[in-house]
Image 1 (cartoon, rainbow, N blue to C red):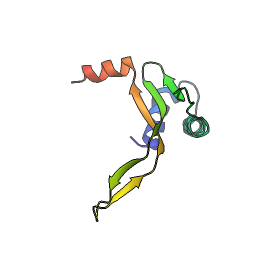
Image 2 (cartoon, rainbow, N blue to C red):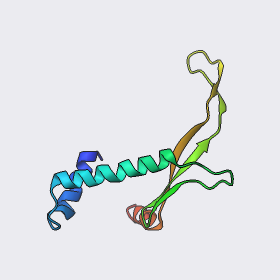
Image 3 (cartoon, rainbow, N blue to C red):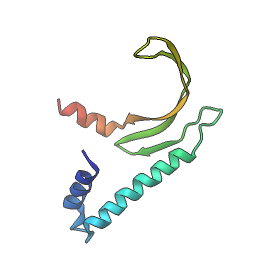
Image 4 (cartoon, helix red, strand yellow):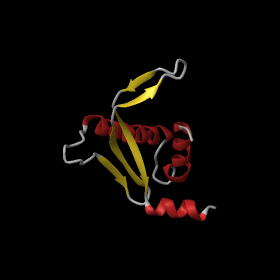
Length: 105
């Protein structure tokens, strides 16, 4: 699904009832993702292992994870290289979404 498809779906299902324009829906979607991005960029993983987390009940949780540096191989030469440590985001399914996915089989 693309950003535009998401905006169109939200507008068709919820926009007209609430008097929202497509532009207003797009601004809301942009605002939500901008705030989430800022939150994860600015937040730190603490020494006690507490990770920044965003939870949307029933859908799931996004959380920041620190991937440690590790050894790898250069794909062309096969020589060993060090892959640097990196911060990533992980996602854990919520119970409602997990149940919907299992029902769709």
